[in-house]
Length: 153
Image (cartoon, rainbow, N blue to C red; front, side, top):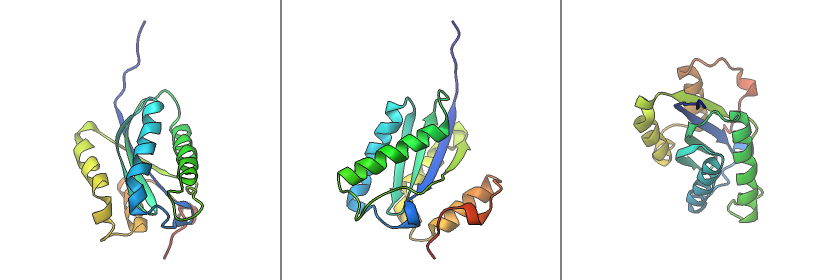
């Protein structure tokens, strides 16, 4: 019997509903670990999960056994429920609809890992909006800004 072999690395980015800063620093590590567990349970490899109070970056080794949109939906639904049940956010919590997904080659793993690892320092210099628009431009993804996340100005 033949097997399926793949090597797919994807960075997923999504924001808190309304771009509100609801995940306090003291809760971020717990949320990150919980999301990493969801990813592993679904059969994917969690490389790193990290973010700041209003958005998150997830870097995975993706197994093409299901759809990426189903995985993101599972992550959002289960983590929102977990955050609310454990009162890890400063008020009722939900993720915004939509997400970004960006693929990388194996040679980029270290750079992407360190980029995600340093999100707190990175966002002292660059806004999430600027960061996200840069991703879309870097990956040559066509978009209409009115359909992107709700931005805080």
